Image 1: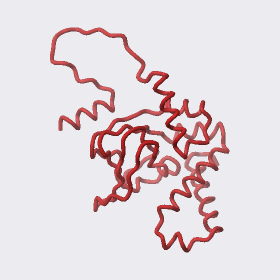
Image 2: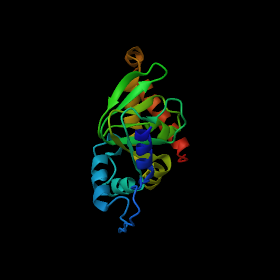
Image 3: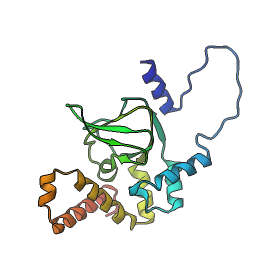
Image 4: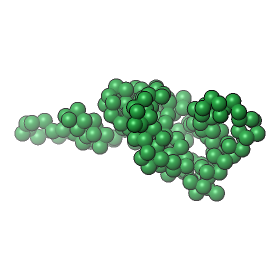
Length: 202
């Protein structure tokens, strides 16, 4: 219980006071220093879905999106929950498990991401994702991503192509083998249209 409280407080920026009666004054610092934001922006450059962004766009995204810390086996998202954001693993590793069996189907390390379909289309979470040890993730909300797409609409083609390919790679082998090139392009177009509708771009 104490461990769960510590991680929850850390995500909310709440400090646990020392059990003393001495007043300690300090200069308040920015929640995140520019150097830390720049480092996060560099990490985003290694993430496929954000690789086509300019350095300024990645910096703006890093500065606007909160980071959260999770302890071992804590759930970051739960299967079936509503969501409108995705997560980038900034450090550590997460496990993707299917409920109710709890079977692990994937492991995502630093610079990996998950939850992109919830951010792009508003779909419910398709799996539970748990921290494997201490993990820091950056949460990217749909509203933040929409700001980038409005400024540079062409980026949406790049993103939808990556997401479509990623989803195709997770499909059942039988379905993937039966899919021809033309249907694959149609599926990609359908996904792009869903993203545009959810982000109010069409």
